[in-house]
Structure formats: C-alpha cells, structure tokens
Image (cartoon, rainbow, N blue to C red; front, side):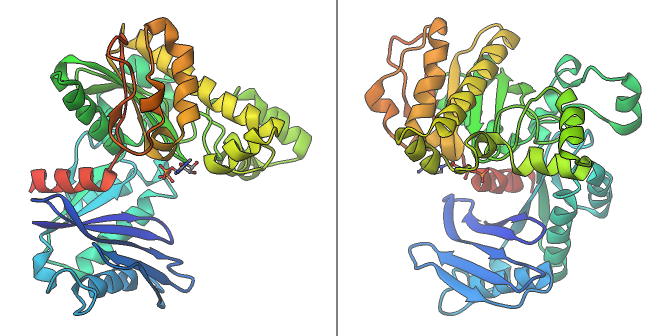
Length: 396
Ligand code: ADP
C-alpha cells in the first residue's frame, strides 16, 4: 500500500509518499507560505527537486497541488489517487486522550480539538491538514499519529509537576512529552541492533534536533522524558531555553518591561544555543565553526548544551536503575561528533568507552562504543515519516 504521510503546520505542509511494502519513499516535498503566496518543493525518488510558485490561499489548495504533482504524467509516481491507500497525519498533542495512534473519525477530530488549548500553534494546523485531505480524498482512510502518545506510559511521579493538584484536575497541567514517534522508532531499532528483546532492555534516547528531548524507555515503555506540558521544558535547544528557574520570568519581565507574550517569545525564539552564543546561530554547523575560531559565547553554548544532555542521561539512568543502550538521533545527535563525544565523556562513570573512529561517522546507523563498553552507545537515524507510515498500515 502507498501511504501519504502529512505533517501540517500553520503555513507549511511536509509530505512523503511511502510504499509500505518496500518502505521506499516514492516522492517527498514541502508546501510553504500557505495563506501568504505559496511554494511547492517536490522531489520524486531518483529525480530532480523542483520548485513551483503556486497560489495557496488555504491548505486545501496546497494538498491539491501535492496530489497533482504525485499523479502528474511527467513527475508523478502514481497514476491516480486510487493508488494512495491511506494518509497518516502527524498530530502534535493527544493530551491524555490518546495513548496510541487512531483511525480518524469525527469523534477523534473532536477529541483532538479538545486538546487545542495544550498546543495552540500545532493542533489546529494538524486538523486543517486532516480536513483538507478529507475534502480531496473522501474515501481514503486516515490515521492520526500523536507526538505525545508514546509517553502516555509515564508514571504519575514522572508526569506530575510540583504545583497545586487542582491545576491537573481542572486544566490537565502535567508533563506530556513530545517527539514520541521518534523515541519509539529509535528505541525499538536500538534493541534490534543490540540483539536484545525490546521489552527487556533499558534505553535512553537523545533526540537532538532543533527541538531536542531525552527519553527513558524501560522494557519498551517510556517512563520519563525531558519535554513537559509543552516542548519548552528540558534540554537547551536551538532557540528554546529548556529548564530555567521559573522566577526568572518575573525578574526579566520587570527589567525588560515585557508582558507574557514577550517573555514567551524570548524563551521560545531567542534563547537556547542561539541566545547563549549571543546570536551567532541556532545551527550547530555555525556554532562549531565559531567555537573553533575561538568565539567564547559559541564555545559556552556548546558546553551548556552537552552538559545538559549528560545530566538528563544521568538522571534517567537513576530513574531506570541502570541503562543498557544510549542512542543519539536527529540532526545534532546524528551529525555532531563533538556533542556525542562530550556527552559520553561525562558518562564515563557508567563504564562507557567510545571508539573514536566509529564516533566520527555521521548520519548512519552505527554502534560507537567499544565492545568492552558497559553500555552500548549508538547512532540511529530517526525516520518519523516511516514510523507514521508503519503505524498507519498497522492500524488499517
Ligand atoms: P528539527 O526536525 O527539530 O528541525 P533536525 O533534527 O532536522 O531538527 O535538526 C536540525 C539541526 O541539526 C540543525 O539546526 C543543526 O544544528 C543540526 N544539523 C543538521 N545537520 C547537520 C550537520 N551535517 N552537521 C552539524 N549539524 C547538523
């Protein structure tokens, strides 16, 4: 079956068409500037990337262009819509309602809408993508795959904040965690690589991308993760602060004369390694170059980033009373040798030994620890689209 995987944002839409039997990507691309003007980037497997400027007043036009490109005589990869058997949608927040992926029904859409408060930027956009697809492919089954679902196995002690209990009762203020599709995919694959049963192993996944989170996966179940009610908690990220003393908010609000919106903008967009490096960049390619040139703020940003990751790995080792596999994934985890090296240096007390030649590999599945290392450390490239396609087929 061919599965169209959709990741819909408020003004953008990423897609991949995946053959679920061979797991090959038939075509992929991106619609941008939806509601502004519109641009479609489209790439069939083995073909050239093409960019089309097209008016996309809404997501419906965007999806129509995606379908046109996929079925087009010249660049298309399928003859007609009939060859698309299902659509898998990434949905960011499933709240406490969804511990698994689900086939989308009117009831499901209503339940997702009820989680809008928890992810006001993402969930409404995800639903718009669902409804646009429904309009154009009314007979094609659709599945929602949630970023939060994998972490619904966290115990109360991991998901409750030290806040009045009534906030949980009234507003569901608790930790949810994100990147669940990636943490699940990567931890499963790590168990396969290690040659151990997934339900009998302790894995810590470091998903280090622009957004970054660590998870503790005990016997195949997420028992803790570093993001919380929102993706702002936890690690120092590209532009997000991660954990800070909450009293900083009042302090900075007064000093800089900022309201809540202003503060949230600082924490989400102007902090992280970008803010720490004094605005050099949120991209590790620029940061490592600036650090190598001797720029102190960039050096500090890299140090703070790795130190925070190492502290979370240490904490999750305690949470699981041990760890068998530590996995690095996503843009930074897969590509930045120096980050992996530094994180593992802090973890030497666990008996971790890294093979420097293996650790110099980027973006490939590889065990980077030595055979004598007490913990297996590996790189496992994440593939959220493939994970969504697999979930979609499994449910149908
Ligand atoms: P997201 O999906 O959250 O946008 P990604 O997982 O794609 O993030 O990671 C993007 C980040 O990964 C970039 O901002 C950059 O810091 C880092 N990155 C990606 N590729 C490389 C590379 N080849 N070398 C160094 N850093 C890289």
